[in-house]
Length: 125
Image (cartoon, rainbow, N blue to C red; front, side, top):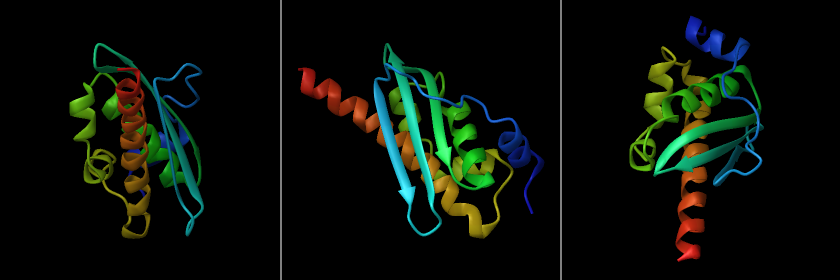
């Protein structure tokens, strides 16, 4: 049902945790399935220097959260905003159709954290 990559990211999630002084935080959830994801980003010179997550949900939710942190870390803000829901699922070797909403949440959480960062920067001006 799940690819080896999904199982690896579920069993050994990367970048799990919080960034206490995060530059941006994004939380998204799906009330239907109960998954809840929070992404934390640290930005230096318009680049995501650190990305961490906390996820409450199924194995696919944990795996997609882990994968998106790897996809986003080291990218510029502009590049990270271009990471799509499909990119997350494809990087994991695919997800069962019933679990595709998990990749949607991971991408949405990352984008929410970036938008939080951008709003804070705009407010400082």
